[in-house]
Image (cartoon, rainbow, N blue to C red; front, side, top):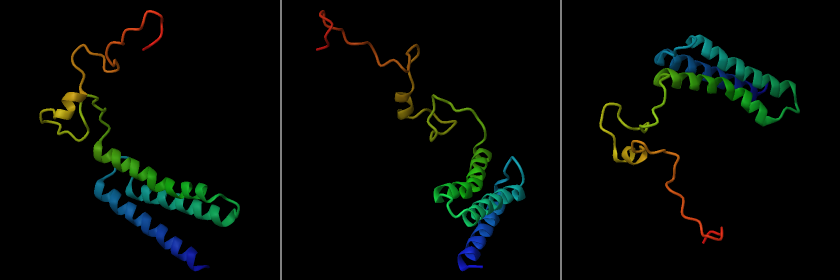
Length: 132
């Protein structure tokens, strides 16, 4: 076994341990910490096996397979931390939920009866149909 394979296996095991520890600390809503760590191991192992068994496998594709497990975990982690609340189009994400709207929010919020997609009235066209 080569040194690169051992180092890759240790790196994969470390990533799975970190995911398990973080999933336990955060308390992910879907699945268990062991399930998320297993998904990281499965994705990394699949990528490593593909790279070893298929010599012509494109490296970007292998990296996508390896990154799939941690990426799915990070998406679930974000959803567990921030919830599945619907987005409020009248508030900026950085604004406090209970405080008054900031100046940026006031300028971003359309006035009552105003269409936010409307850029205002069109300029008058010339009589001969050409714009000046």
